[in-house]
Image (cartoon, rainbow, N blue to C red):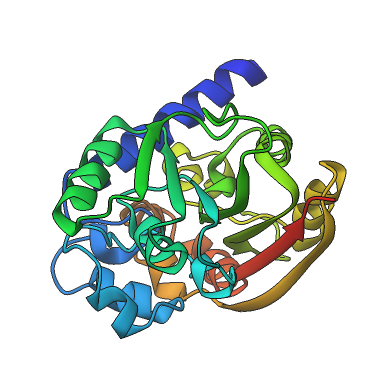
Length: 276
């Protein structure tokens, strides 16, 4: 399979998975998509850094439990700022950011899945968020003007891209000089097991990147003061209870220990960087 074809297949798998998540009460990286008895979206979100008070102020359909951290919690957003959310989903982080920047600020959410955009726009209308706008687009080619954004946030999305250097370049392009980027994403120091790396469902479910590789990609794009400000273990059950992982272990029980070790190595990390 050519690299271009493989990238196209991955993007299709990601879009399909998020389209399914947008049309039901299910997540992408979590056991909520497995059926009854699993963690709710609220429980998942609280476990990765959202407070109960934050979640209570959101429209009912905004939280799908898709993230791996809470990027708005450390973005230090100020009144009047323009915020861009890469891979905005049903709008959870956009709506939290909207409250922080106020009526004089603006929040732009970009997502490549039409079903997610439809849900996010319904949520914005239901919540009366007049300072939030959702745009259809890919994070590798942002529908946003040069030097027009004060802050970029993103939550468990950059790892889904097959061309992260291009995403970094686009983020750098749209940020104003002195602007900052705050990203929550999944990291690990353990290589991805071959069985997961070759599986489109696993790739579409937010596989981690090596910490050092991620930091270097930001620096290569021109960002300064690149750092990880916080990280916490990502609940292993959210990986091991994924239907695809469970099905594979049922067929290949000898792979179970390797997959458990990999799942235990994953952290939700907060990256921060600034544009000179």
